Length: 234
Image (cartoon, rainbow, N blue to C red):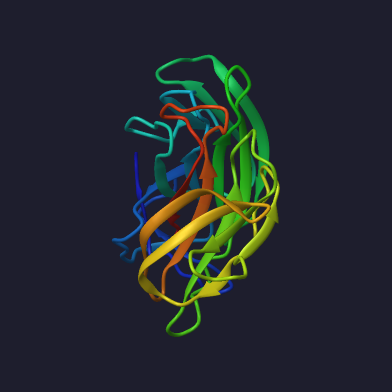
């Protein structure tokens, strides 16, 4: 039976309300309610593997996505019991793993699982998410460099002299930092102070939490070319 994960809470001990217990529980980001409760881990999934095409994400032999999971897509958060879990990916509707790995999840914590690298050897990068509420009147952001052929990168805002986050190598995630909300930030990626990608007119809302991540390949000019993307964690 498929159940809905509800009532995410960002207090130190995160309690999830479940209709019934299952090994892996589908979740919605926005519409939470109440039911019986159990402490689990929250997992978000992001396809950041340029050129890999549509895939299925598998947890303990159960497919997570019930829709196409294509490049740059974010599936939102799901719930999983803590402990050792088997994560894997296959091409869409295939039974053959492209990669699989064991991960250890802790109850009450949130994570994001990014599908990274390129065919024939994509991988899974698991990072912990800090979903504690921002300070009053602020938002929180972090930056992750997920461009396989890019050097260490800085995240900056157009018109400011000092980058927000500096020198993040491939697969490296910053901590979350506080930022003022704005209806129109022009985010920039810089290499040695040269702008190499932009994300213009980006709305950042008070009370929300975001991840900005570099995508694609610097060596490409097609749909997998180098760029900057954003997802809303909360």
